[in-house]
Length: 259
Figure (cartoon, rainbow, N blue to C red):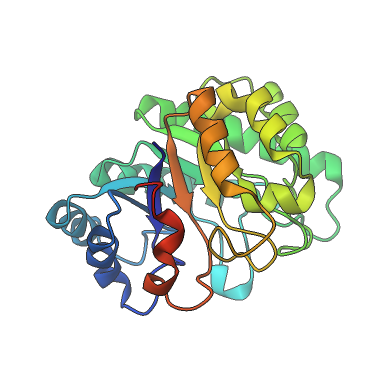
């Protein structure tokens, strides 16, 4: 049976952020993820997790100025020190929250930077982060994201990511496979998951088009859930979708699947 984690950056947004932990637990979730924890003290977040019996499944490394449109800085040659400081901050939070994996957003390639320089910067930063996180007992993930939603996002396909991981050369770096993003970019979901599942540590979902809950678009989620079960995937699946109405009204897709 799949283990679903509520993405609190996108679900239960009818509530203030700190109240979403309770809402997720009441909906039956046992795990949560969200983009960033850094606006809150670790103790605040840990108290919500403990009170509601939730596991912190995932959060991202610091990713630059999100409100200004930045979507990660790991491929920015002029922001290496900022990236490395962010790794230390992520370790602090992940350790306090009992979070066993964090995701690195590669970012949008800066103007005037060649593909080769952006790629080498990303490799060097991932190698640094993988080593530092491994020492702290935390797994590093990196996620390809579609270039329709985020034009210019540097890491945007499965094979591209895995080839880059090979150059990083760390066993502490795995793929975060977002079904929605990869349906937009490349399709072939079932075969890709079967081929590369040993290198996948976390999966996220949303339907396409619209990025709403499963059952609102073209992706055959009942089949994919059965497929993942047959393949023996035992990790979390993060529900990172935009509810078509309210979160609670859209939870019917989980009937018979379980959380």
